Amino acid sequence: MYKTIVVHVDGAPQARERIALAGLVAQGQQAHLVGAATAPPGPPEARRPAQEALERFETQARGIDVSYETRLGEQEAAANLALQARYADLVVLSQSKPDSGMAQQPAPLPEQVALQAGRPVLILPHIGTFAHLDRHALVAWDGSRAATRAIGDALPLLRASKLVTVAVFNPEREHGVHGAQPGADIALYLARHGIQVAVQRQTTSPEQPVGEALLSLAANLQADLFVMGAYGHARWNEILLGGVTRTLLRAMTLPVLMSH
Image (cartoon, rainbow, N blue to C red; front, side, top):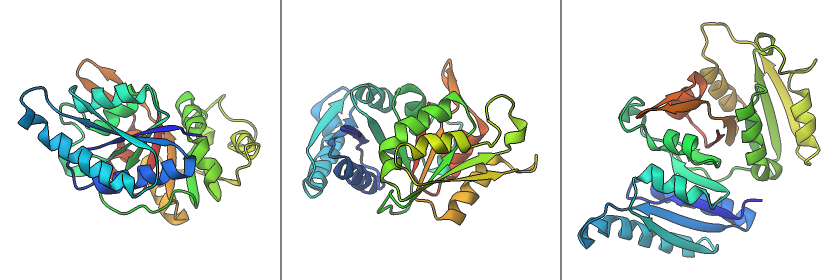
């Protein structure tokens, strides 16, 4: 179970929905909720927007019926969240607006935190309301270390889900990572955790991006949670993402749990 959950708190319109979902997870996990905001060093007036955001968090958290606290850091937002993540089980934040540009510098907050925190991140789309995460989870499985890490990190949420579908795309193109029945071994692993699981194997054309195919499958299944490994690495002042990770961060339509 998750016992400490950090949620990014700021003045953005998405903050209320982000806090609500973090509170929903905290309730279900009987976890402690930490509202983490960032303010630049300087005079008190420079800190006021972050303090006001934390006050709104406290008002909202009181209505969720969870234990909570606030933390105000002076680092850059990604560094602050990565630091707070060291002492938590899960970090909740929002997708950057697609029109903000995935190539902007510094890199958008979700990908920085996903690759630097060392903890799973639950990312909400920048628009929409998400009232549940426990009906149908979709897991992207390719036999990799990152996917294995994501499944392990997502177990508290997967156990609570009524159904989990493991999606295996193009297994014939991967050698040495799947058994005779791709997806069967990880499905058995999940079943031993008491999870109701199904496997879907699909082949895409070389022209069809796997990320888009996964989002299409999520829509067809009416999934309310997507679980995947985050593929990428930092190089100097930029972050290089795998194609599927980049697609999901840009075009997500449901909450995505990522681990690196």
